Amino acid sequence: MSRRRYKCSLSKEQIIDLRARGLSFDKIGEIGGVTGTSIRAYLNPDEFNHRASEYYRRLKGKKRAKFLKKERDKAKESQAISMEEKPKNATFGIEWTLKELKYLRDNIKTKTILELAIDLRRTFHSTKHTVLRFGISARPKAKPSPVLELMRFVSGH
Image (cartoon, rainbow, N blue to C red; front, side, top):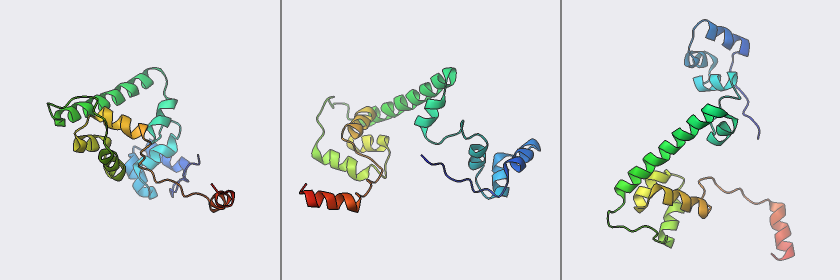
């Protein structure tokens, strides 16, 4: 995975000097033409990462346990919210209909799992599991290579 190139007009030494003088990351970012978050990431690339899974892999000991607790608490909160929205007389273990799966596929790019769960009157965990199970993704699929398409055409597959 390639990292994005840092596009700040300040050098690392200048940033460190400005931090030593008491300027905030946001103020330094404003001077350098980037965000304060970019400045933080530039100074601490190993500790600062936007992707939770990569961040998690780098954590050790108490920091990892704290991160896991925070993620579990967010999931519990989402589950509680979705349970409030679920009809009281609904039973668990109801099969997913094609209409519901199509709704998930069509709206996964614009709504969160919690919003989808509330719309479908399902639980957060059920909706999250179904998205993973059926491979429904918010990311667009890569276009197949023209060479690969030609090879498939020639071979008859």
